Image 1 (spheres, helix red, strand yellow):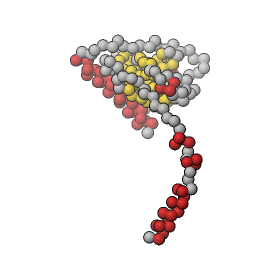
Image 2 (tube, helix red, strand yellow):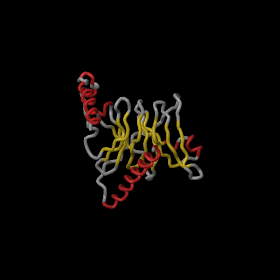
Image 3 (cartoon, helix red, strand yellow):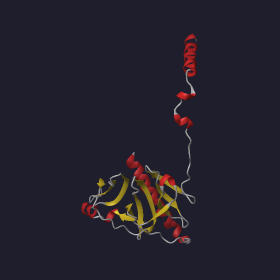
Image 4 (cartoon, one colour):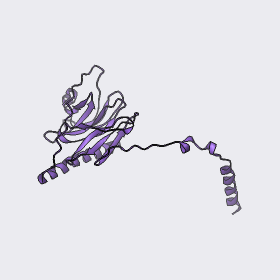
Length: 211
């Protein structure tokens, strides 16, 4: 008992020696909160050093579109798709380049980079085609524009890759394609749910790979 009392006394003396001046400045700092997005369901995934946020947002026709905000999470720009109904952005670098996955006109999920004003389908790039990689899933992009991901090789085995472009690379991205916002017919709900399932599956695969 005496030992416990002695410990408590030492703790009391230690705490008494603290003053508010010794408390880290964080305790006195002012905080601010910015709401990202204003409507629908917003799924946030990454943020860069200027506060630009990327992720996915559900829209009026129940599809999900990749988005990017301005600095400090202000505003929201729909990045569109690769001709399909769905897209989702996973990562962004400090230049505002984003990578993610989007569906094509025939419903396939392709990885993309959003740069120079539009999406570029990474599955169609010459080095990817030459390597025989399919089913690309991108994980991240660094400040040098290098993209990390994996795909299936010709033996249908998962193959990690690092995709890079040089300063003299000429980007010819697809114009931003935003499908018309239509009220879906009852028969299309299953297809929409399938698209959302694809996005969710790819997001889970991405997180499992990071872990």
